[in-house]
Length: 329
Image (cartoon, rainbow, N blue to C red; front, side, top):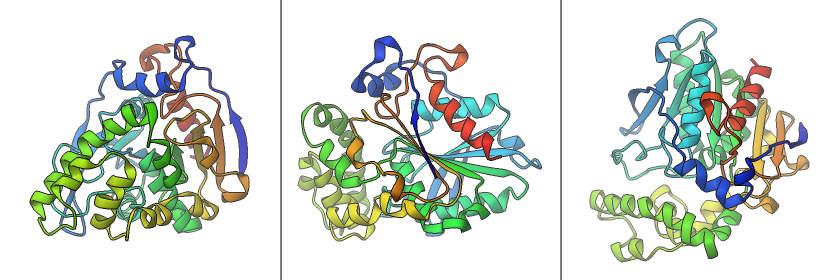
């Protein structure tokens, strides 16, 4: 296990947590040319996967980067585009695994996805390893996807290296309750929470249409204002938790980090408005395979720097991720 201060220099015009967080959403960045696949899940549902260089994935020794996106993200998210573009430029295959309901079509089952959905990661990675036995698999998770991935890595310990060579968690929450509290008021509630609520409420209403017997009402969904409301009235009952507190306690990744053995980079920022710095794991709480890299700046999955070639303003984070992977290839 190692800890080091990540050296990240923001663009001079983006030296602010909120600017760093919001700019990637509004700055233009070219979409990779994706190939979409649909996989049936073991419980008669489906997930969609968007690939780059799929045609090379079965080659002997081919490196495949598997990405689990954040809350209400997709292959269109700026970080996904940047990471997949970097994979392409290096000759790797890459794939964005959409959580259920996040690929543009509502899923079939009442279960969708949540921060602790490591069971979904488990079957995806094992199926990927079975399908591409001659490839080297590397895996990353962003925000919610990072929390679920770190949980999976800790649950599996040394066994995880049967399926993946190395991993990275990017701006993942380590303590879900701390993140929920951070989004309850002020600018965070008015901007970030409102943005999340827009699509989460739509999906909750669709789930009620599919499953009228669910223990929530239309009025509850429409009245939701924060993650306590969402997770207490929607996430928890949908996924088998008693309430929001039970969900947060059982799903937060920090408690699992001591079991991580696969070489894993945990990348967070000290000024993330969504993942408070005080909630991040320290050196005594992580396993031997972990490198903690905490930068002073970068916001939430921002890392906006001065323009660099075709990666524009988004090169720093993908460079850091692939440097970690290449060190363990």
